[in-house]
Image (cartoon, rainbow, N blue to C red):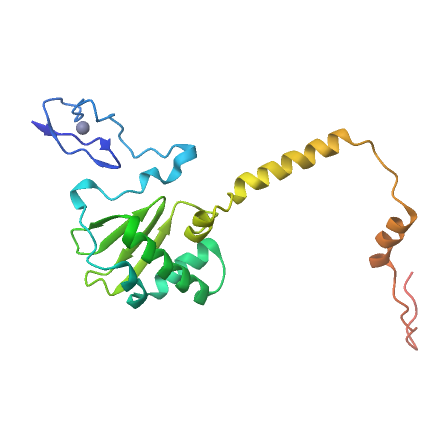
Length: 202
Ligand SMILES: [Zn+2]
């Protein structure tokens, strides 16, 4: 007997199977070799495997007592920008939400995982420190998702499409005299007084 090495619900299936290709073929096991990331649900791959599920022993309001490491803050800033102070504040408020709503579990090495809608935070084994932050959302932080901010990628694509359409539909227009003057301004040569003894190179 082999064990099924295919991906089921974001984790290795692991059930015994008589098949030589290590796929159990049970109805709930799709037989994928890698965790797929469908384009519109890129965060689906980020889950807490069922065998690790365990609630984090913290109350949501204890999120504000948790220390946040520089690594977690730096990761947040690298993805979403902003200041370190803002990142720390947002990570704490995110942890409060995640202690209430996220899938929670514990890795074999003792570290705690909280995963929710494409965001993942990792707590130290004693739950006193947030050691890591990861997201599959390149463009929005959790607070933006919560506030219903539209994805910048989608908005950008829409804007570009509108600009292209406007360009295609509008007839060419001669610039006005004022626009021409404004265009010239940066190119005007300042009045530099002639320097004594320097012959002008022509
Ligand atoms: Zn399977």
